[in-house]
Image (tube, rainbow, N blue to C red; front, side, top):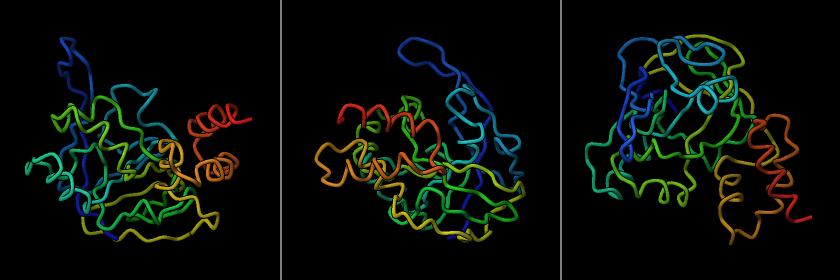
Length: 216
């Protein structure tokens, strides 16, 4: 894996159903090396700190390999790096094989996988297609949120190397599917294992606890 694009954005105002909203999802590629701080990429803003940025969502990575699929699915050849709101567009970033708690070296920074990405209505604004929310959820390829273990710097062309592989088998894709696919036969077992993981973000621990309480 390697970094294909580094992307940042300033907060801007967009119209949504007649209302003005603030968002920083419209990430644009930068040719500069970026600095990775504990809670965000320096120069990248968040409109709503409650849901974006912070220690558990400090960095968002999305696979460059997903873009051809979405270009075809949405009939939109203009989709390009940054348009899913990712800080890093990374080649071969596979949610199927990346586990909660895996650690990756990006440039000089060390990042730890904390949770999948739940799409919100701002993703539809970014790609200009309301269908994306339902389609994105059904595909289970959400991209990856990271917390920052060691701050550092990263740039286009830097390799993304796994320095620690969690051995519990709960991948980003498996966890997201377990939560959203009612027909997934492994759902309950996956959620019971995932909720006990200390490396899973508290937001997802709470979601799983609520869901599991309905099965007790």
